Image (cartoon, rainbow, N blue to C red):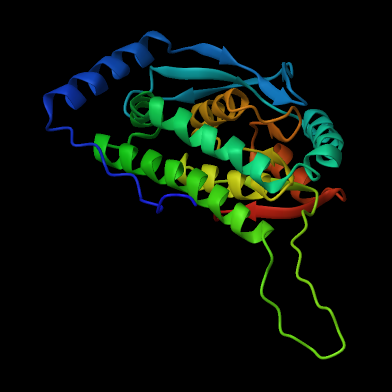
Length: 260
């Protein structure tokens, strides 16, 4: 029996220790400005030959990072990698898939202030808004893990005399995950983790304004033990690869938040 689910409490930055930790993480992040980050396809970090910069919205002279920009070629490779991984991942017991999310939740809790700092710098959120975003992401990881375990158990059905009805949830395949920039970790984590824990593989195209946050999430899932190919990280513009991914015949579902 699992303990009762409880939402993460928000950090109180009026507490000197929390304030000091946040200030230190901001300094540490700034020292890592301008680093290059690769795509992640089929369990490997991949270069595409094209790049784009993520800029601090409060200081256009500060380059958060330089990111490989996926083309249709890399997007297609990611989908094929997802299909290959899905063939095995769909058969993992629900509790094993859920365990990956629970480990990711613990890792994100450990790296919480680090992620807060990057979000302040890449997104322009204040400290409280950034921390609330990350707290929600942590909650999503644990909540969806718990829900997957619940859904894997015997489900209630309407009894019919002479029949033996059964309700079973099955994964669909490879899906497109396209989150927004305004909740770059919370919505990204919610969309991605729900699809993954249900046994699907995903193509994650983060918002162009917040690729560093998407990269951090990818790192966390790798550390949590997610098998290669289940999560594929392909930053790029909606015009260049977004339409290609969502219209691809091998994409089984789309999780999208955004607008024109």
